[in-house]
Image (tube, rainbow, N blue to C red; front, side, top):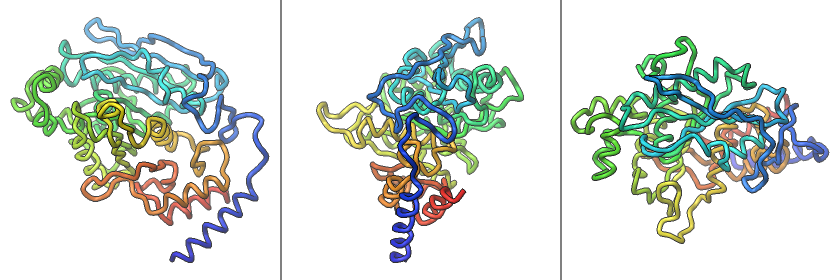
Length: 388
């Protein structure tokens, strides 16, 4: 088997090296021009954008629900993928502003994606399920108006941090018949194609036993009751409750020194996803507290913040942009560099038994078969990508 794999690797490198074309004079993904640079670079400049601020996507009890939207000006006449960011803040704070200026948002723009950042009603004035109702309504609104905004309604990904990580995980796992859709634009799906969770709570029944003081009050303000007084509500508000085999691919990125949302929350979620064969990955960020802050101060986190951005962008892009299939570094080309990248990842798994995390250098783009592991089957998919 080892000799067979060696010859396949060598032949693939030769084949792709010959096939590689001349250097690009413009950045392209497939047949469409994108702002670049490629690979996307968090340190590069922000592309020129067409931006819509404070778009009202609904109104509840006189409260206008708003989102911000931007699309690269260069892609004005293209129907592009859309990614949606959901902010954190303990369900009681935070705002959509700033979502379009994030480094990972910039990288999405460089790839020619549209980005939206949404608001939702906050606690303690509003309790669960108001927050998830608003998030799902935002997706339905965007999908209904996809032609107006200029994106493909069948290519929507979401990501969020902390409480936002909880909400995007809940959006990914709770189906139309789970009672969390809310009102407005009925008949339009809120389903998304991929999810990235940054350090979000995923099982509030367990989470409530791991926090005290202000943390417990935060959960109480969100649920409208202490979780030990209403375990049924806590379970209903937990993404882990709804995990099924048809959930979109998820990647969970969580710091091992997080004292706000314990790392064990990521393990609970990842293990449930693994058992239903979701194409998931769990990234354990070493020496990282909440928000991936180095812990203790001055420590080095691993993977780095730059690679965390790569993981976030590449996971969503893997399922939203077909032109990136087989392009393992998102440089707009398929060549020997991608072959060598795939070689280094053979044998990796996204989540092992008992929520064993993936390697720090997990690459979502190398999981071509989309089964949460990188093996010989991915080689066959990789070779087939160049014979089309």
